[in-house]
Image 1 (cartoon, rainbow, N blue to C red):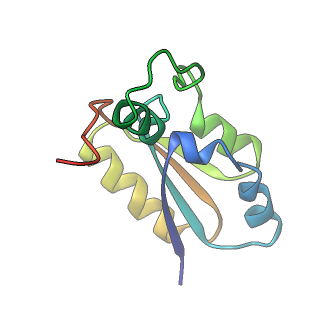
Image 2: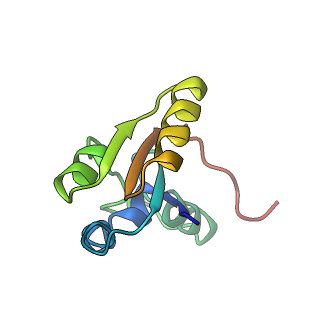
Length: 113
């Protein structure tokens, strides 16, 4: 059975080399990387703690699919729901590592109501 990983682009950037490990060991892993171009959870913590001007929380321009390809994975960018469905079906049928870069909104949502 494939392993399906849902991860944000911030968390993804902590250890993208795991893609290479998956490729080398011929695993069937699908990384669905939700890309809002920021460390949103860290921004939310900063808001909760009333901290301002925290550097390094923006992640503009990172080509997640290109990173996946560089490590040997099958990779694609899915902008629309139809593209995501097609890319996911393709990844399910591909017996290897896939990386799906999925742009999402950068709207923040409060941690506590």
